[in-house]
Length: 169
Image (cartoon, rainbow, N blue to C red; front, side):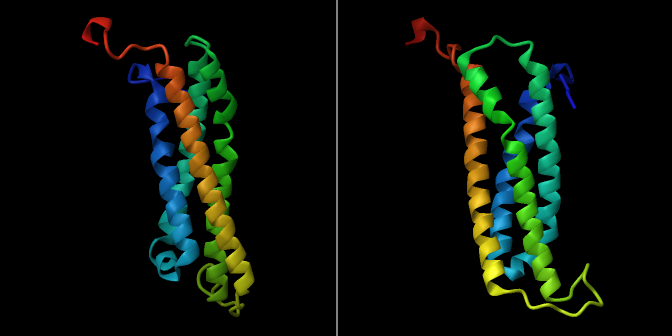
């Protein structure tokens, strides 16, 4: 979905801040879910809900960026930003999937919703440990890539802007 303007302003700078805030929160929440059953019980579904909102907002940010790219001057910094920006999409999905896997594996082991009425199946410690390790890796990679994308976008936006006039130096 390409949204070019929001309230008369370019939508991309406004929309990108939603995944910039939510994806690291989801990453921290997913790692906490992987490491703590208590956290999974208290906030697991909230983290998964935030992951869905983060994924949808990522789509909006990418679409608004595509709408904006035709109206700004091209530069090597902008080309780099465009080249790496879409790589966040599969990472956001993967972050959601590992968090969902942890939640479902735990719920299945305890025969809790959505597995009511089914006998509890002992979760293999090695499976849960492996999924927890994968969650940490995905969380770190997602946050690192998000930083790279934001940094390249900031450089593309501000690289030729003088924030201080020559006489103020």
